[in-house]
Every structure is written in structure tokens, then in C-alpha cells.
Amino acid sequence: MSLAVVYSRAQDGVAAPLVTCEVHLSGGLPGTSIVGLPETAVKEARDRVRAAIQNAQLDYPQRRVTVNLAPADLPKDGGRFDLPIALGILAANGGIPRDALAEYEFIGELALSGELRAVHGVLPAVLHAARAGRRVIVPRENGGEAALARAADVRIADSLLAVCAHLAGRCELPRAQPNAIGSLSPIAHAPDLADVRGQSQARRALEIAAAGSHHLLLVGPPGTGKTMLASRLAGILPPLEEAEALELAAIRSVAGYGTDVTMWKTRAFRAPHHTASAVALVGGGSQPRPGEISLAHHGVLFLDELPEFDRHVLEVLREPLESGHIAISRAARQAEFPARFQLVGAMNPCPCGYAGDTSGRCRCTPDAIARYRQRVSGPLLDRIDLKLEMPRVTQAELRDSACGEASASVRARVIDARDRQLARAGKSNATLSNRETERDCALDARSQRLLDQAIERLGLSARAYHRVLRVARTIADLAGRERIGIADVMESIQYRRFDPG
Image 1 (cartoon, helix red, strand yellow):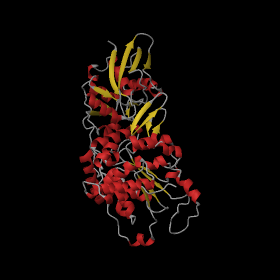
Image 2 (image 1 turned 180 degrees about the horizontal axis):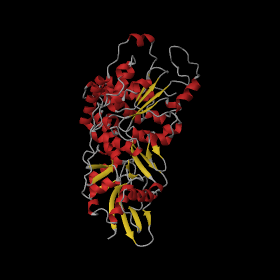
Image 3 (image 1 turned 45 degrees about the vertical axis):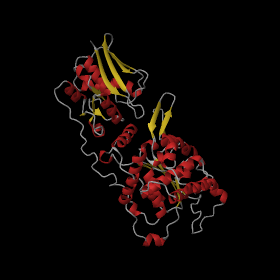
Image 4 (image 1 turned 30 degrees about the vertical axis):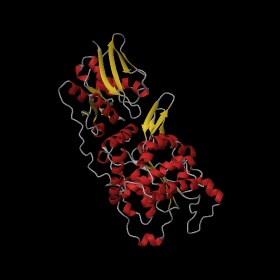
């Protein structure tokens, strides 16, 4: 029978649906056709595969070759199907044993010489193959990334000929080895919070944000340390759990960034420029790819000069901030990417940057200040838990103040607070639902009266009410208290007082 079946995986967001590559040889004029909704790169595989087989000194059948990539309604793109197509043709022609193909899945692009080249999105494919109980063969360049899937049996190959020799039982391919995984501390390369002089209130807000996964907005004149503080948030967050690290590594694999296996449990810190488009920020394209919010999954997304971002770009953040994922829909393709990131924004208080500064340099009119601040919409600001105005640090503070507390010490307190949250609710405080918030953030009568008065005077929304409670719960967790006290509520309210104008 001139029919062979080979298994591979497509790329669909961070999913990797199974693709069955069916190859049939029949009579008629020699030629090769590929069906099953292939994109241009997949159609071109017939020429790459023919040259690779011939240059590997293997026999290419002088018959009619039909390649079907099933399911037929799933779009296939990229060069990842070169290797399974080539193996299917060789198996159908009797060059390699068909039975050996059933227990493997194959991914890889072929050079004309028959060598294997790396492709994007290998890690999600390997994870799905392991769940299906099959082994995987990938190009050597993808071996370090594929080895992150510890439960999978992954073999690495340099060429089509090496894969054929393995399947024929002549020479076994080596396993992908996780040689350097986790060899560096997650904070070994992170900037240290000890470098920050002064700004004790901002350091406190940063610690609260880290402990409860709260979003943070820093407002202040140029040079007050907003960027310096934001860049140190990732270094005081708890280390990623293995499942979280795998999820982030899978996103990076799909995006084509690869994964540094020595730092794969490090929290992401993404800081796109304010000229970034909405597609760059949330993802998209004709073949949907993850954007900055997904690359910051389980990490930090820092938006400096927040009002300078296009208003439309900022508004697309509203849904992911609430849901923790982004669904991208195009005419022919749909994809969903996780986006559970921690937003840190930084902005000046006015167009010139010096409103409220003791130097008295600001000459902006009240209307100009209001227009500048209103570039960031109220609904977006309402989703930010902590808003803090940072004063300019005096020369005396820079010169005379001692170094601040190191990141390692702050991180220990953050981990303790996060452990309390996980033991109580199984999640961080910022992700509690409204019902869970009312259950875990109960107030005594005095604290409730204070909060009710603050809500009325500040004109806060129902969303803001629950966010104040969650921040108060985090403050209590940092102090090791089981119940929220009035001091916790008072401090939490202080972080909602920023007026956007």
C-alpha cells in the first residue's frame, strides 16, 4: 500500500492542534500536490522536500504524490511540516518503515541540503504531544526549548538522514537535555531596590503592588525615580512556578523569541515605547501573534509616559486588565492568548512635567493640565489599584540618605504575604472576584464607616470600592494580620486620591 501517515502539530495561538500528514503515491505524471488549507510557506514545502530528499541521497518517487494535511479546515503555515511531509513520502515509497512513525510526532523545516532548521512554537507542540503519549523529534536548535517539557521524550536531529537512520534502528537520536535549566537565581540579574534613594512612600507602594499583584501608577516630575522604581518590581516578585514558567515560555516560543533556559523562571519585564500600536501591545496580525501584554504574562508591563500613548492603544488594555486574557479575531483566524500581567504606568503631572514641584517652574494653565491628564481615560485609571504622586528628591536626600532596603529583603516579605493569600484563596488578592473579596476582606464597623465616607467624598465607583478592599487585604497580609484594621483601610484609601483632572 502506497500510503503513509505521519503526525505533527500546527500553531494556533498557544495551542498546538494535531495535524495528520497523509501521503499517497499513485500512478500518473510525476508531481507533488499539497492539500488541507496550506498557506504559501507550506505549498512551497514540495520544492524544499524534493531537494532535501535528493541531496540526502535518498530516492524521491517518480509517481504522483498527494499530501493531505488534516484536518482540512485548519490553516497551516510555516515550514514546520517539511520534516513530516518528507518522512511520509519516504515511508510511502518504502524508504523507511511505516510502523516506526506511529509513536512519534515530527516538527522541523528542511534546508535544501537536508539539514533541519529551527521553527517557532516548538514548546507548545511538545507539551501537547507529551499529553497524547507520543515522542517528538525536533531540530537541534529547538532542543533547549523543548527540554523544558520535562515529561516529554524529545529527540533532537541535525538532518533528515539522521531521522531516517533513527527510525530504521541504525543510529539512535540523542535526547534533548535540560543542561542549564534554572542555573541562575531569578533575581541574580535584576536591578536592586537598594539603589533607590529616598521615595519611601513609593517603595512602600511598590512592595504592596508586588505582594498583591496590584496595578500601579506613578505620577511625578522628571527625575523622581519613576522608571527606576518600576524596573525593580520584577526583582521583588515571587519566583515563577514551573507551570507559570512553561506558560510564559510557550508564549515566547510562539512569538519567535525563544527561551533562555538559564533564566526561564524569571518574571518578564516589558517596556514598549509610547509609539507602539494597538496590535503591538495586545497582539494581532493576519496570523495572530502575541503582543506585549502576553509577553508580560505573569510579569510586569511598564508603560512610561502614559499620556503619550495613543488613546485608542490604551483603551484596548481595559478588557485584559479585568479578564487576564486577550481574544484576537480576524476574518480567517481567531486566537486567544493569556495576558495576566501587572501594569505599572508612569506619567508627569502636566505637559511640562513640573506641576506642584517646589521649584515653581511650571507655567501650565489649569486647562492644559486637565487636558493632559485626561489623555488617560477614567475607566482605565479606575482599573489601577495604586496611584501615587512622587515628589522630587532633594539634593540633600540624594547625598545624605543611606542606601534603601535591598530587593532580597523586600522579596522575602512579598513571598510571605503571597503565601498567605494562596493558603486563604488559592490566588493573589488582585485577582479575587467580588464575592471572594467580600468573604476575605470583611471590615469591622469602624473601618466600614471610614470606607463609606471615603467612597462618597472621593466619588469612587463600585469597582474602586472592591479594589480598595483588596489593597487593604494585601497591606494586612504584609503585616501578618488575619483581619483588616482601620489603619490598613486608611492607607489603602490614600492610594486612590490621585485626581486625573
